[in-house]
Length: 136
Image 1: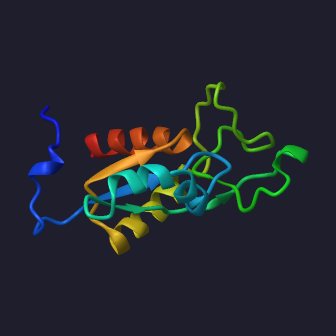
Image 2: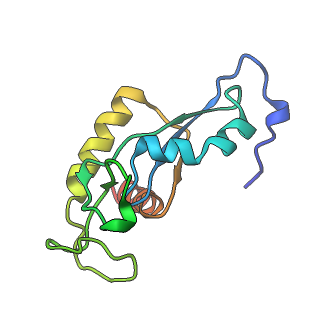
């Protein structure tokens, strides 16, 4: 695979459109804020970043999450609390279908996209979606 040489892009080419998937207990706005330095470094000339928010609210962590607003998740590994533990294997991804439907609507409204940037659970979701696409 060859590297993208942005210095060779002409001003008539459009910026890359990137779908940015946040992690568990985050949302699109939080992820946007956390990627500010990267977005500034890349610049609007080279890339547009799009930040959907997962459809499932996550329960607060207690005192640790004081001030945390509107944390969301793409899927859960359990039906009952605690709903998600990254180190735990689960035979089911509860809520995944709703998240796929939500992302499908987002992509139809805002896409097509040239790539996906995912953090934590969002990165895992990107891998799941790539596998789903590969398998039809």
